[in-house]
Length: 233
Image (cartoon, rainbow, N blue to C red; front, top):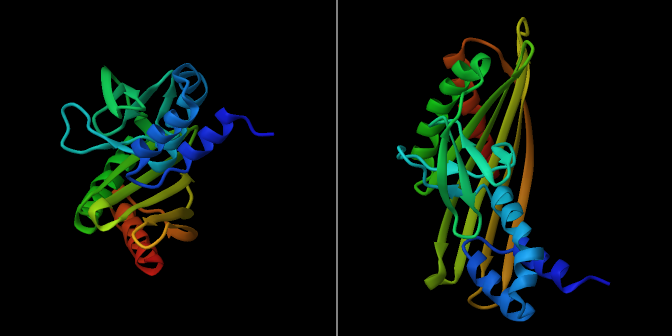
């Protein structure tokens, strides 16, 4: 039999876009035990934020940083590749604090920066409420890049809320002529005026891409992302 805490965690991790606080307050009322909430349910906050790519404001930056599994450093800390900072993140208040410097991965950074520039321009043009985060890493001669996009629109007065998420990744080594770009696109909408309908859909994408210089390949990646997201929408 499922415990109350387990059921509560499931409610929280499945909260519709823009309705996390309402779901949390309902769960808190149902449990009527703040100690149990802090002990058993608080972990669901982090799980939800990382799964939803929740954006957060970062000091010294006009761009928001996305909270993701990849940028999680443990102990409640995350890193922002764009500003080269780590920070403590309050998963309930969704606020960043306690900033510290963060050194980028030297081998992948030029590729990450080129990808970041192109993706930031793409997101600004396409998603008025969007944000993106691009992470670079290396292992020997292999460079890996991971990009996250999040956009949302909350219309509680019109009884609907929605969120768009996508994750794109690729890895390549010196001497390769092409690699595979993998993508996962997710859309989630909650409509509750004449009923209670929640749409959750996703689609995987795989596309081969030529490995060229940083800027040329980044532009090619954006073309693929744009076409994939156009076709999905």
